[in-house]
Image 1 (cartoon, rainbow, N blue to C red):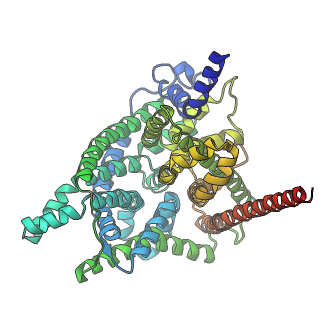
Image 2: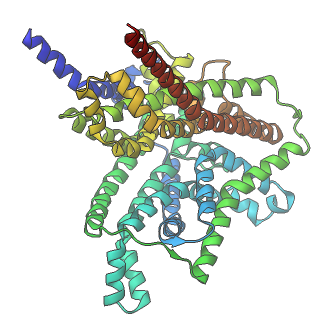
Image 3: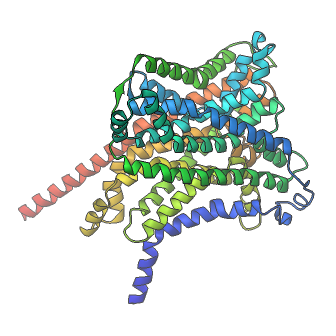
Length: 561
């Protein structure tokens, strides 16, 4: 009997690790392993003949283009990223909120809609026939869009770097280094690990950006690896083995970048440990204010305002190419499907993230195991672009045992797996701030796990959980690469429908559908963020009052007896 209890206790203590290991095995390890070993085992292709007929070798043009453009975008994002981090972390000025909003807008703007907005602008006759058109539909245009899209991630990394260079270093440099230019040079040297991390992250993100490669890259006839993988999976004859070979290029590039970033991150952490005092916020000088407003206006125009304005003008202008002024049935169906898929997948992602992070709060060794697995997943996710994950799911879930291909369930599973790391990273800090003693004290006093979750954790974390759901929902609503590969026949989500209209040059219909989709998506997200905490808090208050009334009634009855 005692042995059975010890076994049950051991299983219970390892529950979070077992859960997380199962999620990793089903969502990542099993599908990706089957896909990546296709060059060695072509018989594992989803249909007979799709592996053995593969062409040997890799596309040298796509490889060179991807490497060159990713390096250029990684270098170009460092100066504005460092400036944005400096302005948000070290300077006090009126436009800080506007700059943060602009960076969030760039982060949430799908890259293919960003590209489409600028395509509409450049399509003007006085631009299309000149140098602007030639630059845009070439290497310069692709690198510029990749740089704009990468500013949101780079600014977050830069803010952490500027925070690490604390007040102690500022005070010491002012005392021992009288020349201002030498103090600036010393600060830049301290920020070199941060700049290296920004470069690595941006290089990986640029090499895996499917939206820009599928729109501007395809129309500029510039082959890129990420789009070449998709072409091998979507054009006849299908070639899964060649897609696996090309995927290895992105995986190795991402792993190399992660290794360098981890090395730089350790150096940055050592510097942060030595400089413990947080830097102070000082007002901007005249020159810094000019730079700040120039960066803010530039990011807002390039990443948000100009693309949205171009979409609005195109949607309200002449139809062209036989477009109708109204959205057709396929468009409305795509919006409805995206709402359904994104809503359910975002709920699953946030719930799984909460369970995993909650398991880390357990006492004992399981919390350390979960923490290490969390770090592995959130880092390894950078090496798995959506196209690669979609191809892996086609192979893994197209057999007799797990026959999910062609069903909405597989698309929801892929959505959840691909955005689970985003939810984990967003909720990591709120869960880390929860003191473990809250749950332990309630457990000692006999409060069940359900009541602890209901009365302690949910009230403290509800708003952050809702925000995490909203962020995942918005990104999934316009998701493209997974949708292109895994959507059920006749049930194309919104992203697939928009790309189809873009490929056929129906810009007017695409602009109208995109704007309506954005409005509906933002309305649903705002309603959920505003209403869910109030509704849950109101329900909890009603339950508390009801229990109080029942308790008072019982006390009165006892007194009467």
